[in-house]
Amino acid sequence: MNPILLAVILVAAIGLIAGIGLSIASVVMAVPKDETAEKIRECLPGANCGACGFSGCDGYAAALSSGETTQTNLCAPGGNDVSNEIAAVLGVDAGVIEPMAAFVHCNGTKTNSKRKLDYKGVMSCRMAAQLFGGPKECVYGCIGYGDCLNVCGFGAISICESVARVDPMKCAACKKCIAACPKGLIELVPMHKTKAAVTCKNHNKGAFTRKECSAGCIGCMKCTKLCEFGAIKVENNTAHVDYEKCTGCGKCAEGCPVKAIHIINLG
Image (cartoon, rainbow, N blue to C red; front, side, top):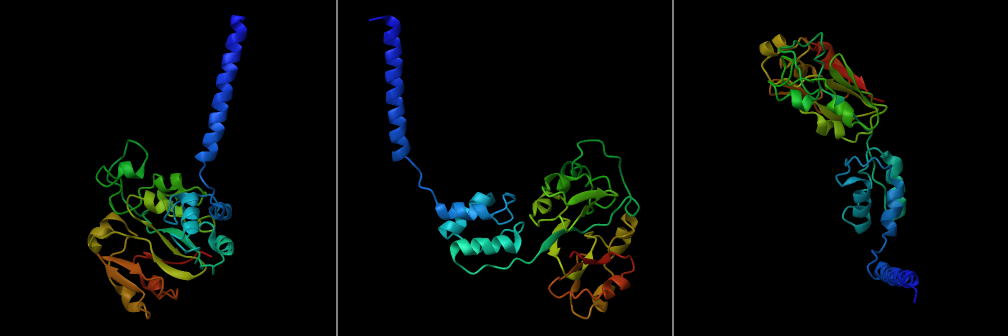
C-alpha cells in the first residue's frame, strides 16, 4: 500500500477514535445545567461588584437557585426591578431595596486642609497613605488620588479640590469605592430622603483638628444638644449621624460652628 495513503488512513482513524471518545466523554462527564440559576443570571445586571456578598452575579444566581439564600434584594445596582424579576423566577415575595448612594465624609479641600509634604510617587491613595498618612496634615482625610474613582464602574466619582465626590444619580451602591478607600471615609447613605451628614472623620481633639483643617469637626457636641431626635452623637471627637433617626431638619447644620455638617438630599 502506498505509504502516503496509509498515513492518511491512520491519521483519519486516530481522529475518528478521538472524536468518538470525546463525544462519549462529553455525555458521561457533562455537568447538569441549572436552568433556574441561568434564568436568575439573566435578571442580574452583570456588574459583578460583589455587593450581594457572593462571587459576582453568577455566584449570587447559584446561591439563590440552591437555596443558600432566599434574599432577592441583595443586588444594589439592580434595585427593586431586579429583585422583583428574581422573585418572579423563584415564585417568592420580592424583598425591598432601599435606594442608597455612596457619600464621602471629608471636606478637606485644598482651601480647607493644610499639606505637610509634597508627595512624589505612585499616584494611589493606598500607597501615599503609607508615607506619614499622606500629604495632608489631617491623616484621617481624603488623599484625593482616586483609588475610589478607579474602581467605580459607573462613572459616579470625580476628584474635586483634592477630595473625592460622588454623583448619587450615577452611584449603584456597589460598595467597591468603600473597599478601595484606605481611610474608610465612604459609606452608603439613604437616597430620596433629606439627611444630615458629617463631612469629617478626624478623631483628634478640636484644637488639633482646627490646625489641620478649617472644616474639620471639633467634637464640641453642639449638634447633639440641638438635635431633638437623638440622631447625632459624638464619638472619638467626631460627630456621627444615625440616619434612621435623622429627619433632616437642618438644626445641627445651622448650629455647627465649623460647618462640618451638611444637609443632603440624594434624590
